Image (cartoon, rainbow, N blue to C red; front, side):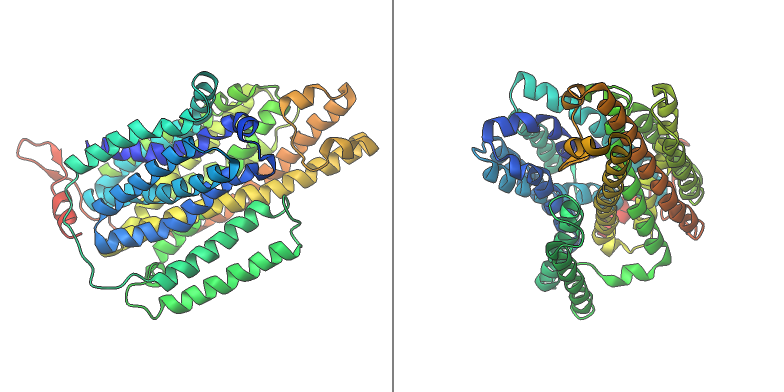
Length: 506
């Protein structure tokens, strides 16, 4: 029952970020505010990233259960308010509240599993959570479109309420963890500085090249604010009794390595899932719905391999091989995707995506497992939140940097193939929706198709080069024995005999 409730909580956090995209045209049509459209997503992402380490530390200090229930309540409150929004400004503010709760949902799920299940047993459960992520990525756009078409866009938020109520009831009834009360004070200064630093980084990746030029005063100013805030944060964390993000956890080489690998996984994963549908719709002629379904090979590969890796880790206690294999497969998959052009079939691209998905499956939960095994039980929350945070930041940087490469390549190719007519097509954005694409003259449309294929080539080629860094880093991960192996029960079956003592030390 606990795992079932945690699955719902993870589904809520992941699904809500995927479900909104398909409803955005309808939302803008009713509420207006087209100029602020991107903030509906940015507000959620920003609040999630900024709050993740704070939720993790609060769980370490005051007990996991109460903090997790609070995060669910905040998320549900934000969902209800978002569904009742009467203007774009209200929706953006309420989405930020949702994001605050979502940060606690994601880190809470991983930290509670870390409390209840020894690392030796943890792989199989974290594999299940990877499956939930895959379901959210596949089902989000489909569910969003269906609810918007049949019940109205407000139901993409209201649907969270019954699911969240089930999670609240199940966690309250069946999750039993010792209550805690830390004598230390909350590190408000560190939390504020970290929030400002993360906010600046996310805004740079969101606005850079879109709202403002990369060399503009706004982006450079945000960069200065981010750097100064993070430098001040490091200074503060070295001097407080209860740092919101204890820096000593980064002294463990394994923790630092897998956190860096997690950043690269986020970079590649979010970058590829952002531009693959665009390639499929523009070059391969898929509809918006079908482009989501065409991602199935990648997501199924990730799901299956993640479950297998979890079970093998539980059975053998060995895990180093998975980051190495994962790094190799991600690099190979990204390189294969970089070979796609206007003639590539859906079958071939599906095979390439499957390779990429299997690489992600090797890394997604293994990195979290190693991170949790590298910290003491008292730091389980901040260890889990740090791994989650760096993966989230990797995704933000991936979308921004790869997006800049994509846009530049599309415009250059259009200028080469369409000459003076290119500016009219790509002005303001290098992306066209399928309806606009059909209205273009055949010659311009053909040029734009080749331009998108060329842009995708650049995205995946650079993704492959960056993935090599993760592959090399994986070789330096040390295989430290996982705490708490399976014990034999009286009837000879395996039992997680050491799970309860671990939970009692929380």
